[in-house]
Image (cartoon, rainbow, N blue to C red; front, top):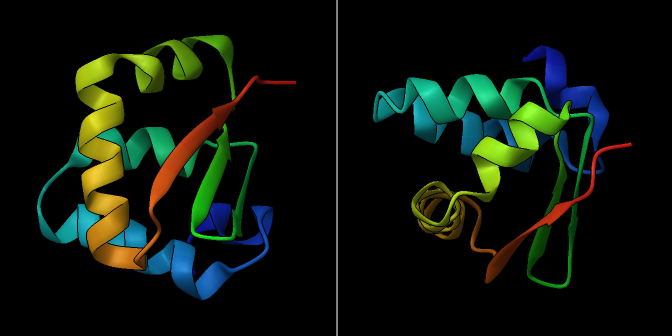
Length: 87
């Protein structure tokens, strides 16, 4: 089990996303997602709270956000990914 699995409401689905990133060698994005403060799956939306402002800045980049959404749709069948402001 990944250390970030216990930070959200659906560890199996979250691990499926992390494994998909690992399988496709998306190591930069995978590293960022392993450090999230929390995640939440609800109504076809994955909400991610980054672990730091730096991580949030990285995940907010248009190209990274688009890449994350594509992988999340494929791995978890969510319709969109939303970033929450870090605590």
